[in-house]
Image (tube, rainbow, N blue to C red; front, side, top):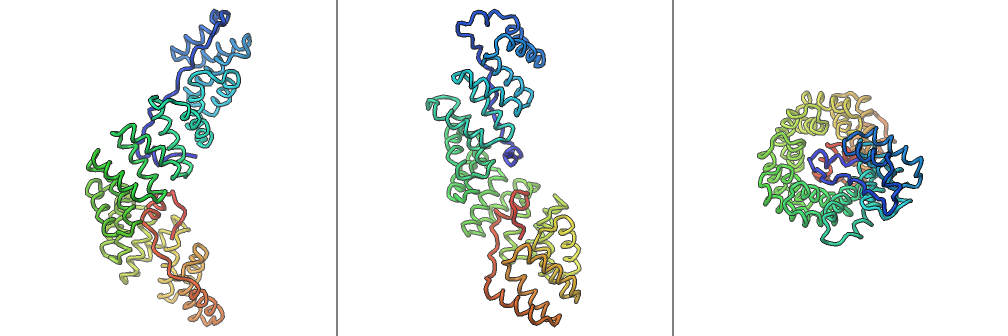
Length: 394
């Protein structure tokens, strides 16, 4: 599992590995051991391979040293070998469950290796054991919240990120993480509340404007959503998906010429933006410009063959051009991608009628009676499709 959406948006973690505590507790032979002393000195010098050699030599004499295993795990993690660090930390934990910093380091190795479930299971008990005033509470809330987000557990992420923002009221990136989680878990009033807080920290945040626009769209305030996306464009006209998002909202309002301008602006920023190409093709078709629509839609399916809208529109264009076999192929593909799209069944029924296939036409007309027109998806879903996060392609 990854948490790339946060990384891409610049949310930086200030949590770092903790140097294992020198744990001698009366063991004078260990304290005097030359290999142990050499290992610690080499660690401090940044000589990882030399320190590892000394610790492993030390383990031959003291095979039950939790300290040695903890330091070996630390050395692996310092070299970003997080998967290799975990079994060493586990061994140290089995030998000495009370060693300070050990559970935090193991949790960080889980987190940074992408094993987010194990990270959560490690961090949650740590958080519960901390006194409220501990500085670790902020770090743990951030880590747990981000781990839940990375797993797609958006509602679970919200309370941890809310607590983190309350402890660090001036951190813009934490609020962006929180507002994304609120939006993904459909807590729209939370989105708008945090958006206002973001504006107090940064009055010109294109990403925050887009997130507020997505929330307003979900609340059926499309004019308000349009206004937010226009504000985002004013701040950052090259923000990924910002023109597509506005174009899609205008498309839902049947303002096709205005929508086309936004789809073209998105394509100026990203010439292979699949959904901008698909919706621009759809707009050109609706504006009775088949020569402009056809190459756009054909390009879409060359890039991504799973965009249903492109197959449906190609089926319509081929039907109008009397290319029946091509129309049938595209409409059947659209039907496989979205069997509940009434438009596909109605178009297939008409095509079968034209081809003289009465039984097939009747079957498709019967399907249209059992289905209702699919409502347009919210802009949140479309932007996730465009970012490669979602799975729908209608």
